[in-house]
Length: 145
Image (cartoon, rainbow, N blue to C red; front, top):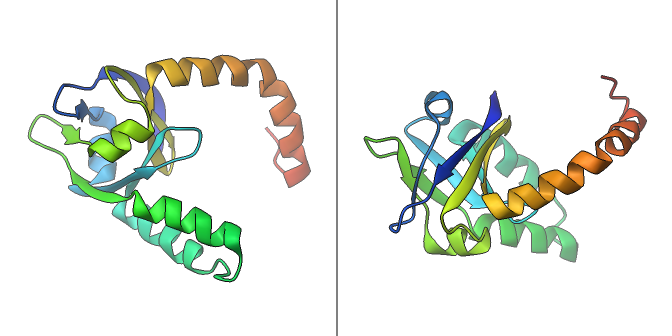
């Protein structure tokens, strides 16, 4: 399980350090793709495989299902860590998430998220204000804290 938040910088070659706590769980090879809320989702191959199987069950005749799977899979790329624990993110993913210098690397249960610090700060501020409301809505899903 991934958890925590870490601030790192992305270098001019598009490399970012993956926190040491995440490296073993991600493995030697992992998948990075466009995520929701203008961040990147990073999955260990085992989690990616489970997600891929679930997405394959979406109805092909539904335009929303096609659009989502197209968006999600077309941006995906297999990545590896270098000896310094960095990953070289492709330009199309850096552009999508607006990654330039300061970034946040978050552990979110079964995945890692990579955010522009600016985008994360705005998202966090907005979410912090509505956290209690969000928690109340989760009770509708039989989820209790």
